[in-house]
Length: 347
Image 1 (spheres, helix red, strand yellow):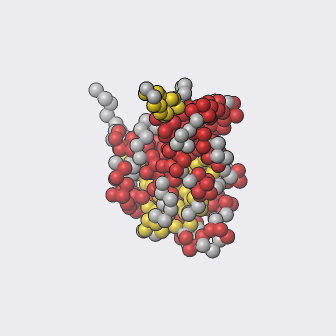
Image 2 (cartoon, one colour; image 1 turned 90 degrees about the horizontal axis):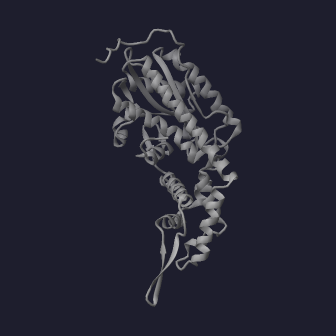
Image 3 (cartoon, one colour; image 1 turned 30 degrees about the horizontal axis):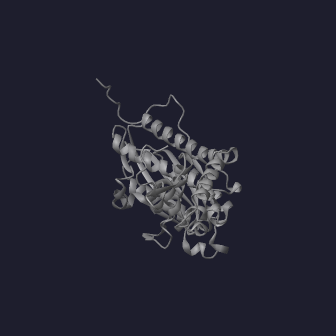
């Protein structure tokens, strides 16, 4: 789905961080995204591998067990705290490959490959069984379902951004997160915001965006859940760059609208545009002013949006009453005049 894999887990970890006003609170297991991805990649490699991964090598009167690097990577997953990760993401479906290996460790079946002096026959039999299960209809269906939503949303987001640039010569891009204050969440049972409230507040916010900023031409939103932040929303909003360039002020204005009016003082927000230096360690995220012919910045923008959709493969919110967890604005009907200066034809 992504041409480049760089910084995916770093971006994901950032989105799990608790933002309190202008502070970033890091009291969370920041390695969980990396651990989930590491397990998934190791299991994918194991399923794709061929032949015996454990072999007996003899050197005269001595012998030793040779372990394929693929099996070594899976063995190293024994250090992963599967129970803690599943508890942390208790409202989500985790990667099918992660869930598969978690079951193997929880049932102690994975000890077939983790003991230092593993029985070669038993170890290879375990590998063969995992390959067979992962290639079976039940697992393939589960995997396909988990991947399908992520791919569909990624395509929709990419096409949406492409069309916005086809209609606008410059876009002023604001990225911000909407949540509920820790003070408010601490008054709730279990610190959990009601799912009906987040749906209602999100609908109100989306309707009110254009009223406050008529230069709005589009937006993408993603609803997520975290044990620390409960329900929260990531928003990327696009404005006509030939009519406004105040990305920091716009993001602040919309964050305050969420906090003060939509949630009546019980919400909070994070203005990513005001923290551009913080995000530059990822080579930027394509926010602020982005011109249609600035291919590098456009690519950064698309990557940042794709991270919002890709994470659904690894941890997908699993609450039917929530409904959609990803959405975008409606484009104006064709035939309306394009905004901005005419573009010169290429020679």
